[in-house]
Image (tube, rainbow, N blue to C red; front, top):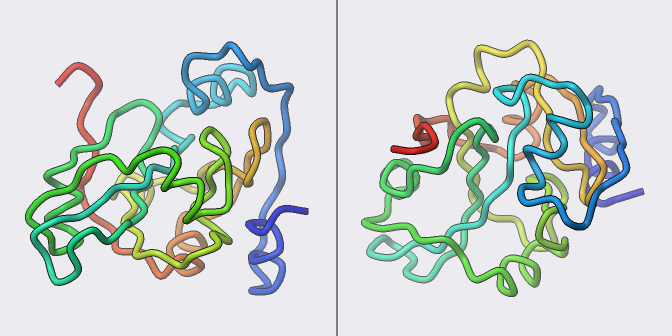
Length: 163
């Protein structure tokens, strides 16, 4: 199984795996998961890696987890993580750091443990979905369990698409 699943098993956290046939031509991996699985896009979260500048650790990578119904507010992520600025990490750097391929990056079981911020919308949900560590594999779990497993900060880091 994937490192994400192995981590949840080692922590004794309850989850459900949900898989689907990934379309390599899909424009958005998270939106594809929501559409194919018939899920509310507010309950499916994408995992993004950001590079922080102007904080205690310039150049530090961090993880931001936001619903696929919105987009990451980089200023909000930087503020939550105590940096002056956040920018999207280079995809190759994200893959090296996480050990996963883009489109299958899970917030769980990454090769390098990074600070993580999860959008506050997660806290109002009974369950949420995040990548299971490969394209076409989602993990359904309680938001509190994801927060615990990743030692995450919870903050308002999402902006509606189009803002």
